[in-house]
Length: 155
Image (cartoon, rainbow, N blue to C red; front, top):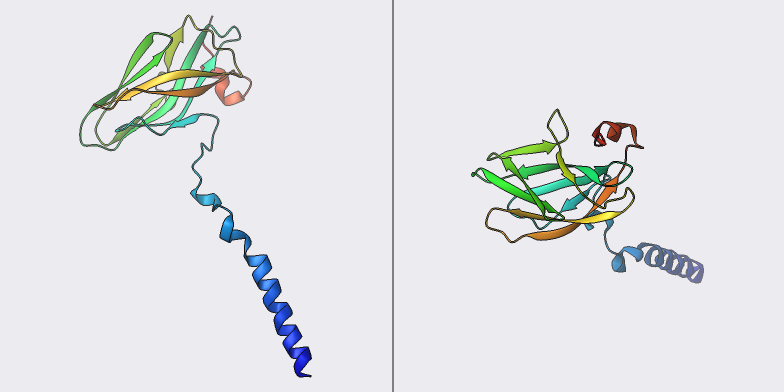
């Protein structure tokens, strides 16, 4: 009888140890940073934060609207510089607020004279405050998705 109990306890311990040990070596999925939408999150444009950044281009890819949310957690009014193919545009972001480019009635930034075909990524530069400019690859989409159709630049 003792050997049966001992065998059952050993088997139960082996099952618990082998099935629960997976998380000891695998990374915890909730700690992995990612962009949960179509756009990209620019992680190093401090002190401003750029969220869900994307370009919506016309079919030829020669013009595109830049859409994003820009968050300012500081007590100062700041300006974000967004650069693409030599064209730099400014976005003023008041202290302790967020600016939604292209959403909630706000105008997106229009870039023209591009070679940005939908389905590709293009490199934009971002600079805010006294931080250094960072380059980040941003996806180029078209108006296939219904909610992006209104953002395709008019020819």
